[in-house]
Structure formats: C-alpha cells, structure tokens
Length: 258
Ligand SMILES: NC(=O)c1ccc[n+]([C@@H]2O[C@H](COP(=O)([O-])OP(=O)(O)OC[C@H]3O[C@@H](n4cnc5c(N)ncnc54)[C@H](O)[C@@H]3O)[C@@H](O)[C@H]2O)c1
Image 1 (cartoon, helix red, strand yellow):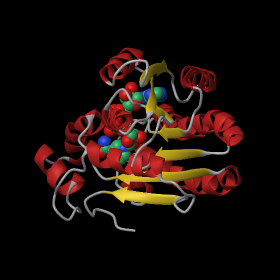
Image 2: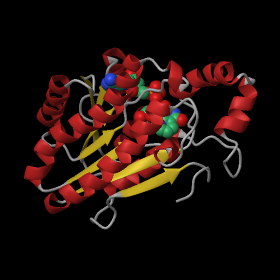
Image 3: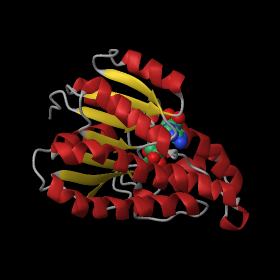
C-alpha cells in the first residue's frame, strides 16, 4: 500500500499511536502534519520523520475550533492539499461515575468528540472541493464494549462509531470515505498511566490489571502494538475504492470480535 504524496492531518501524533501512524504514512510515501497540543514534541517528531518535505508540526488543541481551522489551513498551505484525516488525539480519565467530576467528563468528551467533529469539518473544506478524501477515526474496543470506571471514555468511543457511519453516508457523494479503527490495549503513555490508577481503584495488583483487566479477554494475552494499528490506518488511507466505508476495524488480539 502506497500513499504517493497524499497529505495526512494526524492529531495527537507527537506520541503513541498517532506518532506510529505518522511514521508509517511517511514510510509509505505520504506527507504528514503532526498536529498536537504539545508543539515541542510535535516538532521533534516531524524532524525525526524527515523534516519539512515530508512532515510538519502544527500546534492545535483539537477541542478549539479556531486552532483546528488554522492548523488544517497551515497543512494545506504547506503541502497543497488535505487528503487524509486521522482523528486520533485522546485522553483517558478513570473514575466510578458517582465520583466522576463533571469538568473531567466534559474535558474528555470535548477532546474525543468535539475534536473529531472540528477536525472533520475543517478537513472537508479541502476534501469536498477536490472530490476525494479518507476520514479515519481512532475508536477503541470501547466503541463496542463497556468497562467499569470508564463511563466518559466508553461514551465518547461509542459516539465516534456513530460519527463514522454518518460521515460514510454524508461523504459518499463527495468521494470521501470514513472508517474507524478500534484497538485493544496498546502499550503507550496513555495505558502506562492507567495501570497503577486502575490497581488503586479496583483494589488489585498492577499485574492483575494487565493480565486480567486489560488482556484477560484476548486470545493470546498479548498487547496490540502501535505498528499493528499503523498498518490498518495505512490500509484505510490507501484503499482505492469506496467499497470500504462506514466500517469499524477491530485490532485487539480477539478481545472483541464483530
Ligand atoms: N493506548 C491504547 O491502548 C488505546 C487503545 C484504543 C484506543 N486508543 C486511542 O488512541 C488514541 C491515541 O492514544 P495513545 O495511547 O497513543 O495516547 P498518548 O497519550 O500516547 O498520545 C495522545 C496524544 O494526544 C495529544 N493530545 C491530548 N490532548 C490533545 C488535544 N486536546 N489536542 C491535541 N492533541 C492532544 C497528546 O499530547 C499526545 O501526544 C486515543 O484516541 C486513544 O483513546 C488507545
């Protein structure tokens, strides 16, 4: 699968899964805007991926409309088009619902859901006139399953499934496809932080959080790797026809099967 110079706007690409996707896209001949809240880390990632010809850093809080529009415009100005959106930026906040601070609930939903809405809207300003585009949302097994303590995250990830399916229908007449990737647990900074926190909240050891809570339902007790998710993102970005749209692809070592 090759990207042949196609331009991708990847959010949350300074770290973890987004970073892995940006790297794989550049390897496949794509050009990438590393959009992140953390501009220093985004600049370092862009430099590592080969510098301005292939990768640029753009600062954006995905929940801020002006910042998102400016970052997408800067991408189009630098590379001449916006062909692929990977709406990936996300956070995790874990509490039992009766203790969930409302401000934290709103913050999580804003990053995942407002972020997906605003980046979609900004990128479509380029995709619809050029009559092509690929929208890729970062869901989770939690787009299909629920876990205790994750009410905001599960709500947001289920919401992204709805946005994906709606965009597949709205985008079709403009030749824009929309799909969602749903990974199982991937060892990134986001997950590393959860292990001690869940051990504390559930009153069990960190080892049991990993083997029972995170990997207990997989077929082989393995973490999904960033590279696994990046490969699926490349396939969705490079797919040549509109046959593959509105789909949820689960990459979870069999934790959840459609
Ligand atoms: N790690 C997993 O196990 C896993 C599993 C399924 C889905 N996901 C999803 O994958 C995505 C990436 O997760 P990750 O594990 O790579 O996390 P990560 O913490 O390694 O990276 C997240 C990146 O998003 C950026 N970010 C956070 N808030 C932002 C904002 N408001 N605007 C712009 N950028 C922002 C951070 O600076 C960081 O660079 C998230 O949507 C997450 O829900 C992760």
